[in-house]
Image (tube, rainbow, N blue to C red; front, side, top):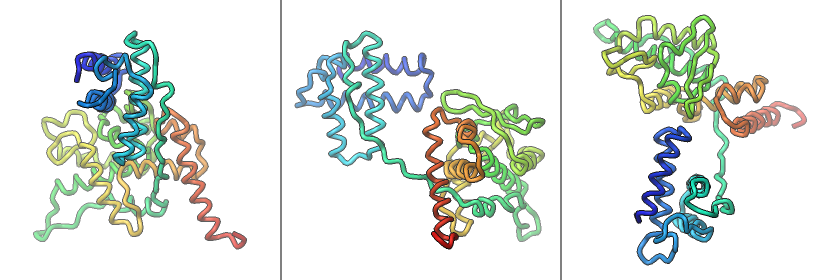
Length: 318
């Protein structure tokens, strides 16, 4: 990559990290998208002034040709939308930082991703999933139960109860520490996207499952690396999102007729069931930690669709 591009991309990464406080994976994604644009413009045989002169020479035509090439390659609309958004942020920063005089990104229209409506569990499926999760495994042939197997079972029960009760993200679940649990108020303190903290209530079944895990079962998996982590893997370290996803998918598959959902599906289900029960949209937004009410509103469409299905199936004049 030419020096002018290298300098600008490096400075932009510093801006995203130090000034905007974005997480490392987010910064990596943004920088990757801008780098992809630079590679498109500087490829041998290309006649783009911005390729040789650097991002200060970017034009709307440059940006459109880049998106058009990716569209011709069959990239998903969601990918095109994300990359277009990333580059618009970059061109705006170029102007603010004095590296460019005009912002071509202001006139760049990006493909809007098709937002597929989430498929939540039905309420009876959620009940079937959670009922009996805390039961200890059957005795082994020699008549004994593995203490570790019991601990894992109780951990899984607590994780699923907490995910469904609170609608928190899988990364938020994995990041929970013992100090984040307020026993008296029966709430969790959660650190969400962008380091934003929020407090979410725990229902009684989730609180009881969490206490069953913490009061004796957790110590069966704990080790020197456990620290204050609430949920642990079998090697005693803080549990990771991949393990949580596997646990949720495995448990949901045991429920007859349930869609194949992971932790994010439980989050969808929690939000949809709250709205089904008449919860205020703003309250659901706060519970889920959505920055925009528009993000939460997608669940109202799901809830309305379920209402329509129930009406069509049950009303004599449907």
